Amino acid sequence: MGKNNMITWTTASEVNNDVQIVERSKDGISGWEMVGKVNGTNGSGDVTYEVYDNKPFNISFINSSVDFDGQEQMSKIVSVRRDGIKGGRINAIYPNPATHQLTADLQSDTDGDAVITISDITGKVMTTSKIYLREGINNHQSDLTSLPSGMYILKVEGAGINEFKKFVKE
Image 1: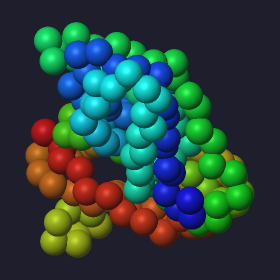
Image 2: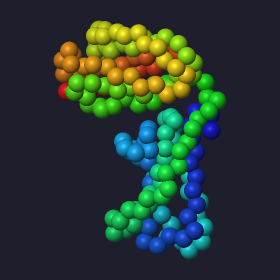
Image 3: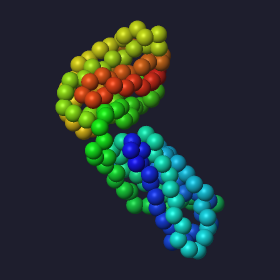
Image 4: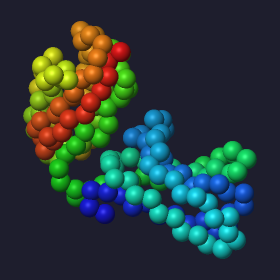
């Protein structure tokens, strides 16, 4: 749905169900984060749920339910690929807070050069690097060892991306 994903699923019946949770991950293996949750109905007939992901990227989704007693049941992992969306973006930066290295998952809508700038919160440029991005998902690591602890801004300009994200260096 435009730049958002609408995730829907149906349960045939529910017993002792507290909530339905949708989580996402950039690789379908680790780094899961919650997209949304809805209360369970504990009904015996089909129930359809809906959650919107307002910051999607090429990721995998997992749907899980949590019972009232805290037990969690995981569903099948479903991969969602967003084709035809123009405009690049910074899908994720991690770890945040970072210590020695920051990884940026960059989604470019075209092949081309991009400039990655790390600035402190006053706008003072700390590092600048020029990289080449291919159309699709790119992974870039920035060395943070020379930066003192504090809050920073990673900005990417070029190859269809013009975006920034805040991060903390410990």
